[in-house]
Length: 577
Image 1 (cartoon, rainbow, N blue to C red):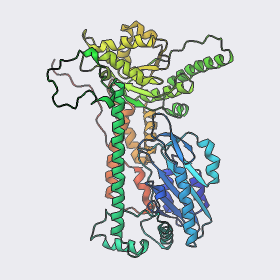
Image 2: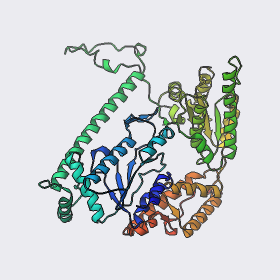
Image 3: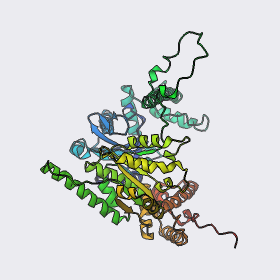
Image 4: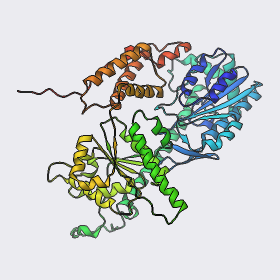
């Protein structure tokens, strides 16, 4: 492996690492092998070795189902609020595997001039700067906060050679001698079709008297044990959730059966107790909770368009910081009263939800909020199946949003013209609760189309004064939609061909001209169009999947054949005269 490639891994970013993982195998002196099944140290984390006769780079993929913010500390990662429980530090796993790998090579008399480790993770390690020098001393590069929806792909060698066989053999002998060998699973191989492959694998990688079928059986038993463990963990998690719900409703879950006598002769004529004699069950509200983001300034500055909103955000932050600084310098000074409540006006797909997350994180950073998360709700959250549910729903939603942002989407639907609509009670209830001075640790944002939202505010003068900040989201231009498209494609490392980009822009321009302004989806339309492109692209690639390693780039090229128009929402034609 050339030192240029090691340098490329050391300087890689979340935007370039995918191309590097797929493209390194094209180097004539580089072999890439999958080694993640040799040691239990790496558990279920994929590990790959980029090798040459005298150098080595080990890449470990740490991919969580949901990207999370964590703090690396010792041998564990500490989960941040709202996130997963603590787990073993993936950098420690990589460091340990690197050490074992080098010992295996030394035992087999395979000399390596330089060894480097690379961790690729979609988790965000908030204390990375504090650990950068330590990682450098351990010869490890950590590429974290990778913003892709799927685990990175690694293009590795299908054919073995003397060098890769030597590494496989050394690793097998080393981990087998220490009873730390985690065998590959062969259950996916056919009994007859792949029998020669199995025998060949047995010959090269298994000790005498231990066949691949036996290894597969052991592996399946271990996987079954792991599934049973996870099942018990899920059951325990469900039990804790039910316990929480019962406690939240004022019901002691441990006392469910205490009032039932063990005697069989229970009197059937026990009178019903009045409803006021016991706690009232609280119907859980339907909301979406979004965790706080870690880099609000960076995300705000990188947002496409929204220049007027960015300025308003920073102006509001300037006042909050001024309050904090003056209070610190002059404790007796009277602070300016800053309302955190706001109105977001705009059509779908203009970034309102994203800006809500940024808004919450910025206010948390300015110490105006304690958590910075976002709770998303709408009319259906408050209007239930029974009269009077609205007040209870408002109370629950405010509890969930305490310390963060409460986003009420399409808030104008709570102002129906029908006189008996129960939704009419929701906004007055909010105004009553928000008038309480103790409710300073929350920001409520009303979202919706501009015209109906302005009508809502005009009909309720109290709302207008309670929500002084107005943020208007304009429709994206064609150039801005093209920039959004490029950013979405870069998540998967896709690139348009020249003909493909021209066809895509033509389709986008035609859809923009023919759009119904009231139904135009902006960035949502781009997302839907790209989804149809991804499907055609995948279908085309699978027809020609036997490309050589040097033609891997074709899998990342969006051609004109992948792009077809989709339906654009329009006004329905009128029927009649």
